[in-house]
Amino acid sequence: MDIGFVGLGRMGRPIARRLIEAGHDVVVFNRTPGRIDELVFAGARAADDVAAVCRGRSVVVTMLADDAALTDVALRPGGLRDSLSAGAIHVAMGTHGVAAMSRIDAAHREASQRFVAAPVLGRPEAAEAGQLGIVVAGPPDASEDCAPLFEAIGRRTFDAGTRPAGASAIKLANNFVLGCAIEAIGEAFALVRKHDVAANVMQDVLTDGLFGCVAYRTYARIIADEAYDHVGFSATLALKDATLVLAAGEAARVPLPGANTLRDRLLGAIAHGDGERDWAVIAREQARASGLG
Ligand SMILES: NC(=O)c1ccc[n+]([C@@H]2O[C@H](COP(=O)([O-])OP(=O)(O)OC[C@H]3O[C@@H](n4cnc5c(N)ncnc54)[C@H](OP(=O)(O)O)[C@@H]3O)[C@@H](O)[C@H]2O)c1
Image 1 (tube, rainbow, N blue to C red):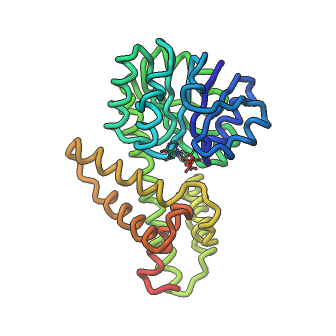
Image 2: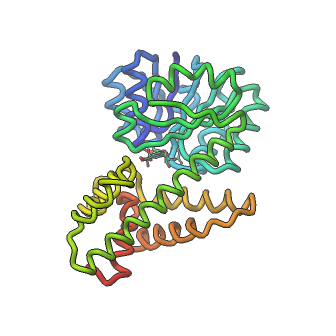
């Protein structure tokens, strides 16, 4: 496929690399130019701006930090909506709010373009290994056209229907569950540490049986080792997601008490200077609250 790619951060770089390695013709653009060098070396062509990344492309993927970045790249003059040809597809793979998805979907429809939301499940390591889960929602013909793209980067896709906002709701709800699990692991570790038990014993017990899945194994290890500087997903971006979860809940009148706790923990971590550490750093907040150094 001929693919344009905008947003070469922690997730965008390994995803774009998989597309290149699968033989797709990939043109890349990133706001900070130095981040595209390794992809150009791997076989991508560099574009100077968003308009150039759209030229002659039937699909353009965005993997951007937040709604503000996506809205700017998609809707500003000379952005995706102005530059994609009729019938071309914008695939948004970042984690975005339900309202932003609906707004961008409407803008692309007006321009006779197709918009697919395809937020991903998995950290950068999963992206490198082509093992992402991909939650897909959009016009069925567009989702089908993107199948070779999804095959190159994911272990499976989940069909979330035709409304892009639906894929966002699922992705946000899933991140909410994961965040609550990390919060619970942090609380549990603080409890046993206060009772003078080594963290690695708790890690072993927790991940041996009922909670032996990848999520608990990954985050119990990070928290036991206090390895918050090996960043897969930053606390700043996790706060963005917690805020989007609460907004989605408020819009639909769904109370989410756990999401409020998660948001406050992330706010505390960021206030303590840990915003660019891995979001598991919320366990350090619990440790502080428990009087642990
Ligand atoms: N990391 C994970 O484990 C993970 C997993 C699943 C989903 N996600 C989601 O995937 C998305 C990307 O995450 P990430 O970890 O790759 O983030 P990241 O490393 O911070 O990269 C963010 C990307 O967005 C670009 N960007 C930010 N603001 C921009 C703006 N105003 N205009 C243009 N470009 C802008 C950045 O460009 P610069 O290089 O110029 O800053 C960079 O390319 C987020 O929505 C995140 O929630 C992340």
